[in-house]
Length: 473
Image 1 (cartoon, one colour):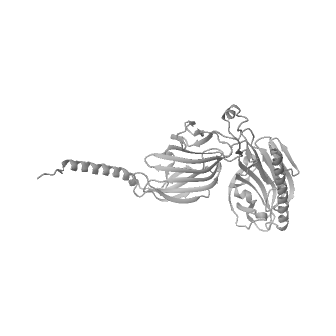
Image 2 (tube, rainbow, N blue to C red; image 1 turned 90 degrees about the vertical axis):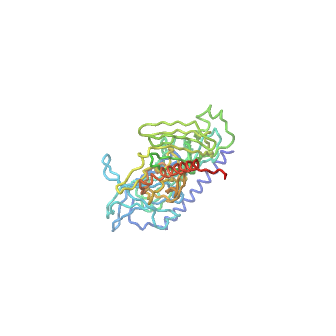
């Protein structure tokens, strides 16, 4: 009965996709591209091996207009824009072994929305593309939470099946002379996929195309239903506090709220079955994760609301450190866990002095746990008391806030630089810098305060011993 219901739902979804295809087709007939660019060849490779979807789009663009072109537009349907975590572009020059890659700027375009609400991004070319000239561009973008569990609930012994929605044709504001799309799945276990001839399946790859002479905004929806038992590890919130002490230490504290975002678990859970049949029972669950920490890490701890968790393993070397953590229980679909990871680092590895005399922290922004999506990350950099004029350099857009933190022996409080970002993927794990001014005299503030307190107590004790407070004539 459940299989019949699932197939009925899948048939209904296919019908809706067909109607959507008609909608895009009618819109494209009414809307024509005003640009005189055209795409000679387009190849798109979609990697569905994990729950983080990585796409590489290679374009060869030609200018058939009368004036040079400075930008190339990319079009995305609204559902993909919502889950777009990162987009990058580069110009390719040379051939084969002598090929060179030149990064290009990609920004959201101010153009009006295209048919059916399509959104645009603009690629700024290094040099204007002259009439009759062509350029090769490679675009890489990442989509998160774009795989839908189907069915949405599974028992402990069932595999995890998911749906992926896209288009066999590349959505573009330009005409495309020739295009192909290749979709890579984690295994050969593909339940079904929409066939748009020519299309084929070879082992773990689905190939759509080549398609010739497609008009602007062509769109043909497809649906791929396949097995994906990789853990859908999603950190709903990560709050990292980086406390700088000029006495030689950098203290890191990370608070995690982790959830398995795959098909939800239904029914009871059998620990005996889970341990005795690991290849069948709970194949999409995960019971350990690996956090890649900086080298020379020390004083590492891992605990949750109950207390310290001893089921963790730290492997250190000169170039890296890996912390293998295990929650108190395996995480099945829909289950969550909260925990804290803390560690210390040598200050000289991350704090430096710039040419203008300012100090700056150079640290990694993203989540250290591999293959994890972070819905929201907050990096709090606690500067020493007395720091002034903090400024930040981040290689991508973030929300910048300021706070003040009071700890022991603080008088005016410590400045806190707060950096927030949503929809973070492993590719965001690049370095950022926090610059600030600090006078060395402020390092003597706390020792002088302690010395003054002890001196005052000593003088008070001596005065008390020499005072006569007895009542007498």
